[in-house]
Length: 590
Image 1 (tube, helix red, strand yellow):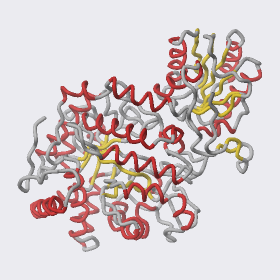
Image 2: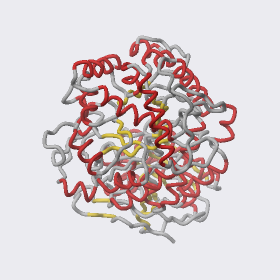
Image 3: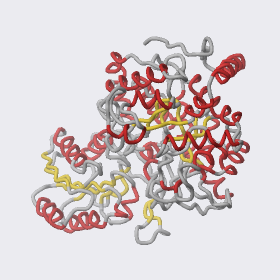
Image 4: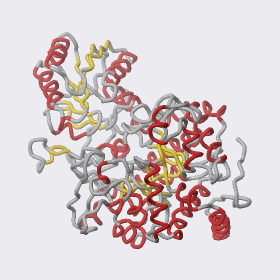
């Protein structure tokens, strides 16, 4: 993996601790860099954009439609952007696998180094674990954050983040928009849920800090990644998805300090490289009611001045409705910079966004010094993580570094400590003798057949005779009838649920299977709040439908391991949210 030299003289070495001499050296280096750069190049560094395709030189019609050029490399060269972000098949279809992604990253970095700015890219991704996973097997997959909260181990959180970070860096990804620092205090939160570690600020804070240290600690040849705590000032109490609307958080400022602030404060204390904004209204923190992303009282007065945070602030996607509800696409980037933000993520119209910022500088609304301030933070992030000196990765080494047996075993061990048994009234668990089983329901909502099929396969590998009958997110009456009929001839029925609060048909399926009188194991495969909507003698929470979680579930069902997870949230009664059916810290074992 060759070292790549960039402009402005020799890049100061990165050594553990970043002592004052190193910091002064990189500041001097950055001063020289800024003097060389044009205003257009500086503004380009502020933007992190999505590109379409799986290779730097792949022609894709969406690049032409969005950017006026054909390939990802041409996007980088034309606009001289500071970063790109990858999505899998649910978005820009960038990911085929680890080796492909490493080649893609190298191609984009070479394009950046060949551009006028000649600065390597921040290559970003959302690899949180659980349902927000962009790179799947053969890379190591991870359970959702709430599973880590159920495991209660800061050491496990740090291990997971370290493995995740080093695998991402091997693939050429150097910034992970994780961990989620939101405290999921609203059980009906439509967008955070199991992405949060806990509803308790102290537990969430401990695990956020552990993951920051895991991502950003040094010590391996593949380097480390920047982490990003999200979504400031806290998305956990939202009742609206900010992708589609503008949530309003009604907490008082005192409640915010007690509930939402601690994980972000812990992230700052742990040395977090970046913090992502939330597109939410928080009237007690900014009475004007503008989204937090464009709020100077929140981004500068609270985050920078009061909390002392001097790292990079990055917006959530500027294509989300939460930030576009009140302002147009030309105004949003300027308002965000005025508020104190540095990185502008995924503007829906890049040319418009860049031109708006340039016009604001030329008119005097923004100063070039203000732009320099953000570029300096971004460049120093790239220096700290070794991106400036070593932007390229060794593609041939990827299979030896990603999805290794050691990584897979370590993540399996920590996931084994997260499964939580909420109810075992009839003593059904563990089922120590191999049984005939029917696995129904849904886990992965993108591929509804996947989770029941995987679980049936794992049970069969344990000596059971297991059949999968995937019923989907909203099973039709005929599918429910098929499941009820199939249940009559098996010893155990396992029902995977996902978000019963919004899916009445799933509740009907579970209820009708319970009415058959067959032994039923109900499994909340995403949020544990499902257990509040249907009373079942046996309820288990896995917080994730990833294969690693289904393997741990299999071990608990068959008695190979005892459950060790403890609820990281209160599970309220679905019919009466003021009543707690399963309290925080609840979890049965044997």
